[in-house]
Structure formats: structure tokens, C-alpha cells
Image (tube, rainbow, N blue to C red):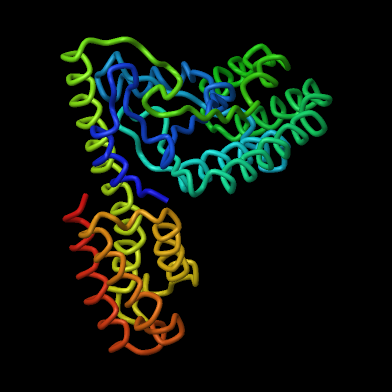
Length: 323
């Protein structure tokens, strides 16, 4: 299969007067439409007034989350929605306009099957656990928030808070149904089916603009990959720099597992036709998957810990320079 960068480099050579260039054989745009957080968030006028007075900023806004009770099915619905967003971000790359994201063709089948499953599970939970009991869930959350308000020691502020809590604050059942319905959409890059008649000058300009846009996309995707490595590496360094037995030295296995996952995730894109990125990933894979001490050694042996910090710091510098 033609790599993404090769498709970009070759795009200009395949343009004719009636065909705009495309890299649809190597990548497409993936879109996830969702707006759940705004649906379960409301302005907190009381807290907002206090913050504005404290900051001296009349433009400051404060909002409060509805359904903060962890036992509420709506919290689980919000979590499911977040999982879908996390999956979408993990298996796509940044695109030039920060809207749709780049999905490599090699991941198409996996992405389509997984998002269909996520969509089905969320829709089933919404229709079975939330919508049929919506009025009851709202009533329960109102009581939960009222109980929290009763803990406020100042009687005036307590009453003000209680006066603000009302079922009228909550979205309708119809709003919840529409806002929590996931929509995954795919779009070809470069308008593959949109053939237009252009002059020779217009075609040349389109070719130049398209090549520039694709080169920006390649650079953006490389930066995205580098960042995916930098974040878990820096978190590991921050924790491992604390000497054994000192406060903050204890870490979970996930700290190390996230490093393995980062390497696997970057590798899964097959995006190694950028020579600098390919070399950086190779070095990271060589150390993290082969040479780095085990989690147990990092917990019990200070020299292993110090060595890991030094090696991870070198990797962090390499990937940081690629961002």
C-alpha cells in the first residue's frame, strides 16, 4: 500500500485538467459529532457572582455539573460517551483544521467495527437505562444536590443555593436523546468524486495548494505522534525522579504500561515513512520494550530507577524536538 507521505509526494504527478489530486487510497477524514457535556452543565449564578467579585472580572463565568452522583446511570452514559471520544482520538491523527481527524486507510476496518460497537452500546444503554426513567433520574439528582446544599454552614447562602435547584434546570428527555447519540462520519480527502473543469493555471494552483495542505497534514501527524510519546514518558520521568521510599515515589503498574501502549499505538499507524519519527520510535521501542527495568525493579532498586530516568529523559528530548 502507498504510504501517506508517498501519496502526498506523488499527488501532483497524477493531476489532470479534469481531476483534482487525492490521497483517498491512503487516508480519509473521520468525524465524531457529540455535545453531551453542555447538555448536563448549567450556569451557577451564585458561585459566578462570588468569583466575579473576588477576581474583579465581570466576564468570569461559573458552571455546575448536573448528575454528580456516581450511582446515577447518567454518569455512566457520560463515561461511555467519553470512551467513544477517547477511542476516536487515539486511533486518528490531527488534521490541519482541528475539526475532522485523519484516519489512515489501514485502520479503516478496525475503526469502523469498533465505532459501530461503541455506538450500539451507548444507544442501547441510553434507550434502556436512561430515557425510560428520565423523570425519576432528574428527581433523584435534585434531591442529591439539595442534600449537598444542606451542608453549607451559612444559612443565607444555603437558602440561595437551595432556591437555585429545580427540575426546570434539566434538559428534556428529547434533548438527552439527541445529544447523547454518537455520530461517526467518514469523508474522502480532496473531493475524490467532485470532478471539475479548470484551466491549466487553476489546476496548477490547485495542485500547489493541495500539496502544501498535505505537507502541513504530514507535519501535523508527525507532531501528533511525537506528542503521544512525550506525554507518558514525561509522566514516568516525573514519578521515577522521586527517590525510593520518599513521599510520592510509589507508582501504579499503569505508569509503565502506558509507555508500552504509547509505542504500540504509534506503531499501529504504520506512520514510519518520516525518517526522524521512524528512528525515534525505533529507539523508544528498543528501550521501553527491551531494555527498561521491570516495574518491580523500579520500585526496589534505586540504580535501576536512576538509569530509567536518564534514558527516558533522552527519549523525551528526541520526541519533544519533533513536535
